[in-house]
Image 1: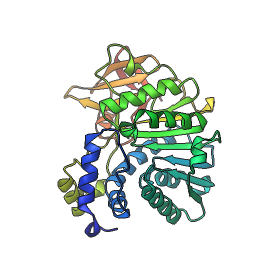
Image 2 (image 1 turned 120 degrees about the vertical axis):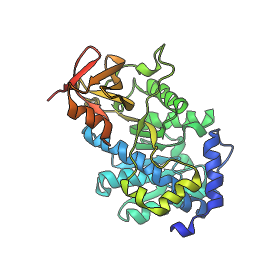
Image 3 (image 1 turned 90 degrees about the horizontal axis):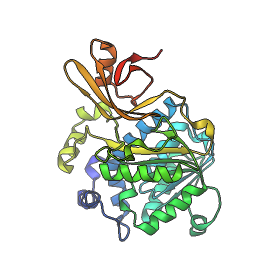
Image 4 (image 1 turned 45 degrees about the vertical axis):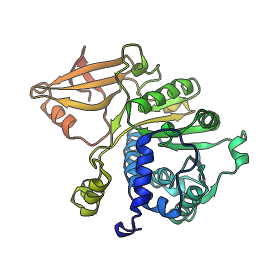
Length: 327
């Protein structure tokens, strides 16, 4: 696939469907050309979100213990390929993929087989989907706003069989709060690895916080802004290449996967004003707006404005004032 080969009518149709955000009555993948064009463009942007999530998991010291991966609702299979590439193909023995579209399942299988020739790659059978067989590492990506209730119930059953779950979704208010509600369902049975720094009930869902939602921003690779093809794609597709909001959930059966005490996670983006920065902070005590005076820690003030790393910190603070970072 090259930029010259893109199937723009297919991309326009897919984009319109994604923007509608309604549950699907059937597969929207029509051909291999659909998937190849999507994988080269929109799926690559989803891959950048997964890259950011995976960097945060590494920062937290987490890696999957299971040697089997199951990519449910795989589409072109970009999520599984990103995860396996990040941790290394030698970390895994097998990859199962499933999509309600057979053409998507075929595409994802072939793409993963090319990328990881030593890995056992196959499509999940209907028997596996309804069995009690352990799942291993379950990967879910950008499906939540498309699922009718019965499909979501089937996904819940798969989560119940999983050793660990990595789930990434668009960072919209509605989708994020839906994912947060699922976190509350799963929390009694799993350790929440990320984005949370605690195992308590989600404070975003507490009464009075209805306008808030747990979301984050992934940076796009800087080189794409000097790439005329990507710039033209953004203009043609009507998207902001700089904006990659997402929400996610990482779960593990092991209690050892819990974050160390005292960590905080910034929700959304820090806001910068001339004398101070303001952040929406989530930690074991709940949700709070914190401020950092520029004069208190000029280097941290600048870092919060420029960093592209996951926004996980251990503050020195007094009340709602950040004084700096613990060393």
